[in-house]
Length: 240
Image 1 (tube, helix red, strand yellow):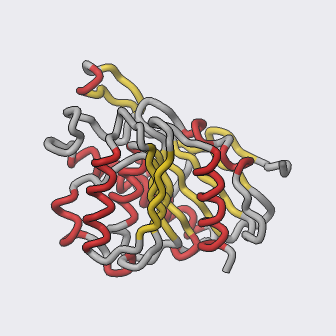
Image 2 (image 1 turned 180 degrees about the vertical axis):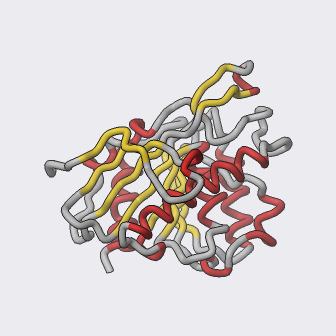
Image 3 (image 1 turned 120 degrees about the horizontal axis):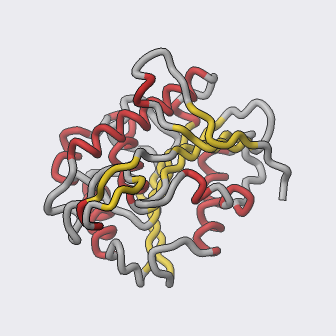
């Protein structure tokens, strides 16, 4: 594996709304990165959760990439009896979508947009930025990426679903209507049922979004075959 430099728990800074900025773990695959991946963790985890995946991805042919793993803020989560944990938004019920924490989703969307802006300030345009996420992080990838006003390189959506689905037709950005989307799910997922992800996939395909769909024999997790598929997709999206 390559010797990857990294900065742990590096607080991001901008000139505005500094109090909203999230702390992150950052890994560079080489000097002077010209692409970035902003990767959101799942409920109750933090930015460290997906750090090990960088070493497992085959990124041969890709330019140097900055991986940014933000830590969501902590909040009481209703479905977990109000237990305080890191979460991108509150979960109000088992079905995930009948009642949704719209305010929480939109607040976290703004925080992720600030991370995109920080990469822009570092010289990486939106067109060279991939948003990625697992579970709640997947929901935030779709919530943010489909609405972002500039074209992104792609969206990686793992074991999650499309939040605020009834609003996406009117709120989505023209700039990202043709942005490639990698969606993957476990057939035995007991946390986010695969039917929820399939409904999200079908809606986005009906709206004309290009979806590369994968499903695996796994629960609410990530498997080796999936990591191989993500690496291949990233090489296609970022190698040009």
